[in-house]
Image 1 (cartoon, rainbow, N blue to C red):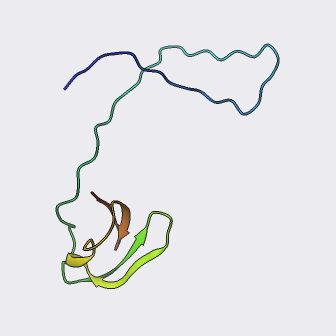
Image 2: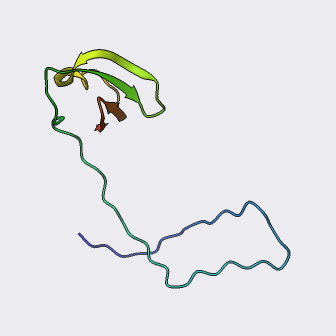
Length: 87
């Protein structure tokens, strides 16, 4: 799928110097499509895993991998040693 159109990008500078310039040369912007949900986690489905939120807080402890995403809100989690997106 290819689309074209106007796009507006903002640049934020933390320090302003009198007479300062910012130049962009050969600038390319790439679109990465939205990630899709994970259908299954490739690990032993009976293995006990811990589930962590993206900020490192434990959400579930010692749950079967097959049931690890049950009841989770949308977001990114670490289940066992895998990053998982719940949609």
